[in-house]
Length: 144
Image (cartoon, rainbow, N blue to C red; front, side):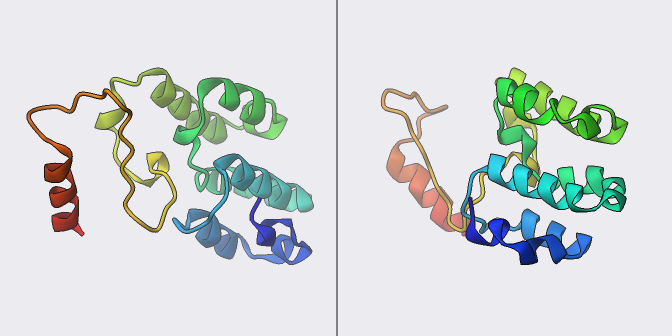
């Protein structure tokens, strides 16, 4: 877990500062740790629960696998019982359950956090069309 998320000062952040931090693409920790930090912030005082949907929307739930969403997210009563939070989780479950539809999703909630462009090709993967790795790298450099 990112060291700042473990400090007591983290709990004193305003909701807007928390969301800006949680939305950052440069946080170098697991998405589960970001979820746990958001839950910790929400539970610090009872009056923060009204912000649960907004805070949960900063977590890239689409990066979780379905079993993680069920065991780590839906087990939290305040998430399971809040219709807005539940909708976010249901959308993430739908995303992770339909791998062939994933390319149709756009937005930051299904993108890995990284400050650089990363490409991961599994050995033996066939690329669509007639692209070789040099063509792909050229296209990425052209976009940046």
